[in-house]
Length: 242
Image 1: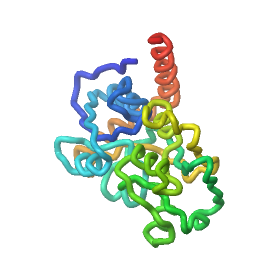
Image 2: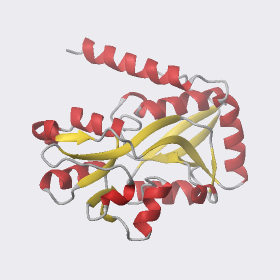
Image 3: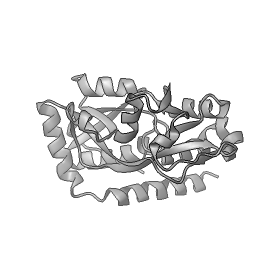
């Protein structure tokens, strides 16, 4: 599962541990990282990735001159003021996870009034949800990571959590601390939002140049095929190691 290595300019990006999208211990550092590397390689760019907690990812990726930007960033009008967005590098479904013995029933977000909702620090969770949080209509409890949020859920410290469907699936499959409890956790069938993912390039001359170069190659790429190939090869490698 190797992307071609470019011998040209280095593009340094920051990201977080958010498997299977980006993860330091996965092949090519995760499926979305693999897409980014392949597209960047076609643009003559060698991608180097630094992992950190999300708040640090944004801080460093958006302002440190040693870096070009950060990913995977969800598009928001507010965030567009501070960076140049790449085209779409992937999608993720965001929704609510809850415990099977404490069912969650909701049709509209105001239905969640009085419910303590676990969220991750500085994650964007959709304009409507975030607006209700700012207006104190919804009650939230902030955690530093998705895994911390899941532990709070299992300990009864929050009623539900906001999480990516793909990330929840990956954590339940791979985190040893969740194995005994994974049958208790349910992802609600009604999604909160479906986000497109992007690189957030720094809002400067170099960032604009990199955005244009990356987007030119992204427009020619079949990212869905890249994702499917990644997971097929991952499954094959796992089967072969048994």
